[in-house]
Image 1 (tube, rainbow, N blue to C red):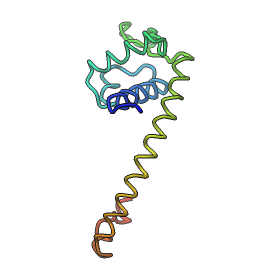
Image 2 (tube, one colour):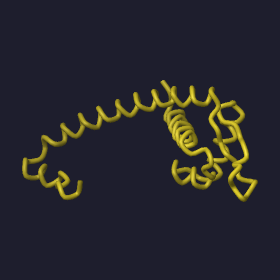
Image 3 (cartoon, one colour):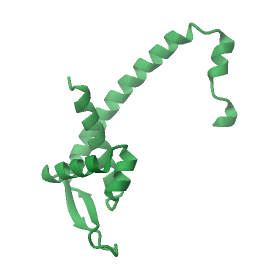
Length: 125
């Protein structure tokens, strides 16, 4: 079974590949902000993805700043994103089920009125 660090790295790679597939011209700074990691970590992750052949660099042709890059997923990168997506979903669904069971267990400690007070109102939806 993968360790916590491996799971976190999988999550970061999954999020980076997913974002780049949707928006290849995303800057490292914007990508870092969206994923919730530092710009330096983003640079390291992108470099590793390029070295593994999952992402290729291309100049972002419509940019006035020709130093900007587009990070395009390769076919191998698309396949890896699909694999990471499956692992992410399996892990998150298991986490969800554990949380749901824990909530039900703790809920039994509350009265109906206390439970009702915790639920978001219809106005917040």
